[in-house]
Image (cartoon, rainbow, N blue to C red; front, side, top):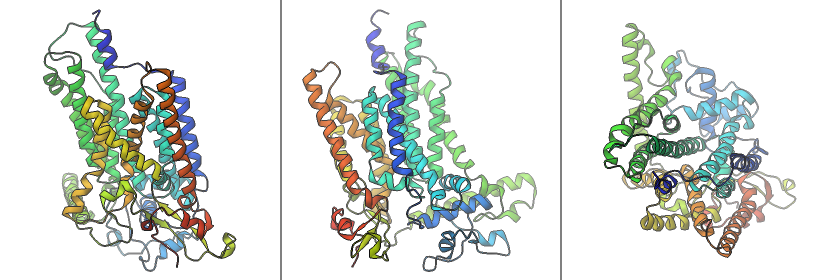
Length: 528
């Protein structure tokens, strides 16, 4: 066993810093990001963009267990107006619960998470945005920790958390009650669980190699809690938005490839047979069965109440418990089929819509909020502006585009698993939208990119690690590399600071607002 040291280090590289340092740095960065997200969270005091759907659906889940039809419509938003005066009489009245059932296009988990904030703090802008701010802040901590695990560097982990904290789109969605921030969180959490599972599985292989008689296929790796956790998180992602399925499939394949690679790196004679025999069955349970059960569980409110869309409660309860289960599942599958048809046919024009190829370049952001009736006294100038513009920090996003290109070259030349994982995650969250753009001409928006923003940050961090160099690199090389990385982080910070007023609904002069519009296409609510 004297020659085992090098393979062991390849399978489980040591961390550079102590656990105390590894936690304190990311937590400090998350607190900083949390302050950005929670300060003035209740501003603007308005129902912002698609909050008009999810805020009320969340309250309906909280009070009725399912989504119900509200008063008013897009031209006459009675329910929105009443909410802002704390009048909760917003539901349409119907003779039977099923008559007020509302067809909704997304699964319920994200709305249940919004409802948690409404339950804690009431039906106020702060209350319905609270959960988004929480998961936005937690995602900074999760990314910092997963970047540390991938790079074995607390410094690079903190850099990842800082960059995510300074992204404009992430900030806006962390301060708005939309579903996409919850999708991003569960996708990132699932990825983090799989990275932790990768380390744990390889540590078990090392222990087996050092203590047991060897076989050609290697051992069973036992119960893998992190992989079960990944299945729960990725199932939760699907239970927020259907697009979580792209990440679930990609990450399931990635996990199996990691298992094959670990057994192969150990020098086993039949690594692939070992992975298929021992790892695949457990992987199917963790990343197939567990997500399915998680997704189905999120619909509990629909199953146990009579007022859901397509529920057919009277029919389901007419012939005993077995028929109840069978008919309920049939009705539920019919509902899911309607949702799929809705998404396939969603092609109406919207002034903020954009194409997937435009998203990394920030060509067409989304104006979440721009009132046109601000008095001059609000800012001390002739014309005032107050905006929430859903756009990423350009210095971060354009740097990420270059970093992703660098990752492609790095992966082709070295097959580094970290580069491959980040590229796969980015592809899973971006490329499928090209199909919908070409096949269905689907209406799409820039904020659909938010699930891949953490992986864009990881691409930058991995390139930053290459720029700084290995620990055994010459000191001058590392100092210069650290200076370059530090300068880039400073540019992102300054860029974010400059954009912050139009991200967080600060009242500024119209001239200041115009100065922050990088492109003409950003002017989605241009004053006359």
